[in-house]
Length: 165
Image (cartoon, rainbow, N blue to C red; front, side, top):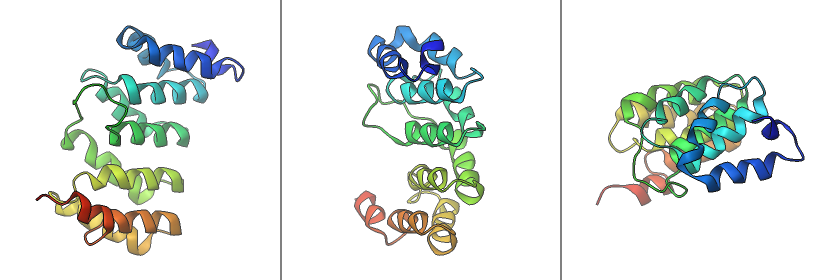
């Protein structure tokens, strides 16, 4: 894990973890508790590729990390399906409340913008998710977050593209 804290070795160590696959999960899980934010961030990024059903709760817990980069990457890993090898996803009841909380109140615009994607997963089936996206579209102090929320809110381009047929 100390290599992830070394700027000269971090990327190579990260890719070693990712390319090692499931056998690297115990080390990645341990790295989520590391005192160095860079290590926690790299481990969170690795989970975008390696997460399994048993690790999702740890990834959800990273939404409360003090480092905003970790929160952004945890949200990305929870929202993104492209990098995953299996089809498992966290349940709405385990994730939506935390994502809504971050979208409404996180001080970092990048965290709020990534929270839009997580909340947007349930915009067609959960009226509170729709309402928080509409509120962010209309009231977030950051123009880029308002724009992204508009894509996911009812009537937006992503909302229309992802609408059930």
